[in-house]
Amino acid sequence: MINMFLEKKSKRELFKEMYEENFQYIYSFVYSRLAGRVDSVEDIVQNVFMSAMNSIDRFKGKSSYRTWLCGIARYKVMDYYRKEVSFESIEYMDEINNVDSSLSLEDIVINEETKAIVIKILNKLPSIYKFVLILKYIDNYSVKEIADIFQRTPKAIDGILQRGKIQFKNEFLKLKGADFYER
Amino acid sequence: MKDDDKAFEKLIRSIETDVELAKGFKEQLFEDVMYKSKENYQPSFFAEKLFFVSPWKLTIPSSLLFSIIIKLAMGSSFNKAVGMIFGLGGF
Image 1 (cartoon, each protein chain N blue to C red):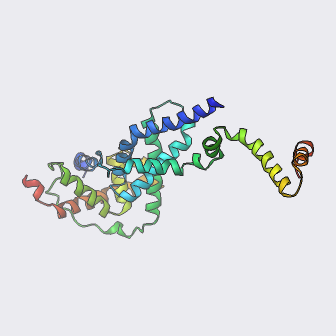
Image 2: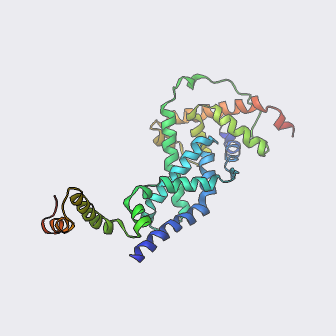
């Protein structure tokens, strides 16, 4: 009886240890994938750790806790993406303004202000543009892999990616414009 | 646009940094997770908290105890109630 109690107690302790070590990392992981939508980030992070707590017995130790938690977080984030995209109309697809091709994003300095602007712009974009850009540039997913996630053709995703980039660049230049290039 | 890939990667990846959290948020979320996790809704949680035993050990005695209480409430004497449970089983 005592052994069983101790086993259960150590399970909780184990979870607490795992939580302490990985909370900040998982929070930041989800935060960047959701471009800072705090309410949803908190819900997802809570769900990640609840799933981890409920299935910690099944953790085989083949990877680190962090890798395991990231896998759970990725699954929850993809689920969120699919739900968000399913509520969205696709009328925006044709709304593309011409971008000033003489300006490049290459020389932009990354600082706190830039990060805030990136988050702001990503959240102004239609969800699918935002998620495709994040999957492509943060997670390094291929167009084919992104197409599988959203159950669309690679050609459609490639179109979305190009349009997303144009809209992102337009918004960026509109918001900060030449300021960045004068620094 | 292909040439912009590196610039896009740099810009969009910039949001992947440690986020500063409100004080106490981490602790509060831990409490919420512990409270809402399946673990807390299972008999094991109550069994451990109240009796320090695993649920399967608690299930049989608690069922018998419950049956005896019902028998007593129905007017049986204690000996009769116990006898009925162990001798005949059920109601």
